[in-house]
Length: 504
Image (cartoon, rainbow, N blue to C red):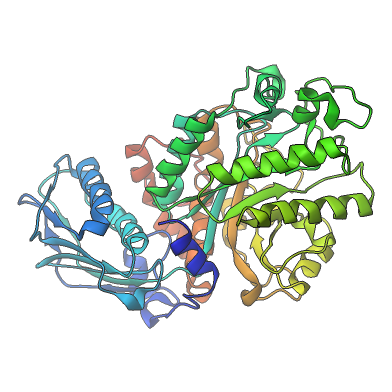
């Protein structure tokens, strides 16, 4: 788990996806309501009966994955399977052809056989099984053969815990929901003008002052080291990598309110609880700022076992181009010194970037010069076009929460785009993956998060996982409609988009 699988994917160990005719243009793939759409699907004439006690067998390396399957069966049927050496449900690590995250699944009268090359692949196969499980006792899993491989290595969601704070339990809840749709990255936006959410040794006022509020003047909150480790461990158990973001050098009023020396005039700023952007920046180039950034980067890197550290870099309006570029290059040096790869929003493309740094495309209202410049420097992109995948955008004018600066984003908008054709001059080989951010200016509860994420997050998950030429919005909408029953069982708050033909 960890760098071994995500880094292998990022390095291109698994390139391309084999497409079966049955998955292209509909056909039998649409007879099963799986999201995201697998690479290959074949319906078999008979399935596996669940009348008898189910026994699950798995190799020791996949014991945790087997535990997830036990809980999934219990949730769906009310009956707890047993773990044993010779079960009718067999998990195995004997499919090297599946790559770092792929899997092969067969369900027939002889049982369930799920094979992969890695525990991560088995886990994603279990998520497919969760969607196939019938509810209640005395039923069967329909016969099926699936061979599935992801299109992109980075399949992410971002949760902003800075504008409004979300407790550890809420973050775990979101991890459960995103992993159910085979997303493997949770990008946590841990600092902004309105709040600093991660304790840093040697800088206690970052949380004592900077973590004490949020938009609207609420109580805020923060994660101590143990809280953060708990989140990371929970995510890793579900093959989700936590990518922490400390937004620098702008979006820093919470830090500027915490320490006077981070301001060029030596005076603390007042805590900020509004929604404006672009007004704050560190006093770049000063020894105090360099020590601060060095300490923060080192502390976050120590707490984060995964390979990535996000330094933000967006919407900096108070620094010169030279000051901004110099800061990004210094931050990149500090990140690389910890053994991590730097990630930043698309504005970092204006700086001199190492080939292993990653640029996140977001601003669809401006020319993509910065993104193209990042690619010319050899970097990879994470695609997060705001007009397609920003989950904080309203569905329509009547949506009760959310923003609309990037336009309204309905389910079809979130689905009908190709990450390899969004930016001129950027192709499949330049794209590391896809991420769907959720900013929380208007979002106060986990129910609010779910309402904005569902049903759009599964749409983005299919963009990130499934073969491009196999996708069709109408067929996706028909498959997704049945997931309302799953969401009811999982107690998910969701928006009943008129674009989905809900069954009830």
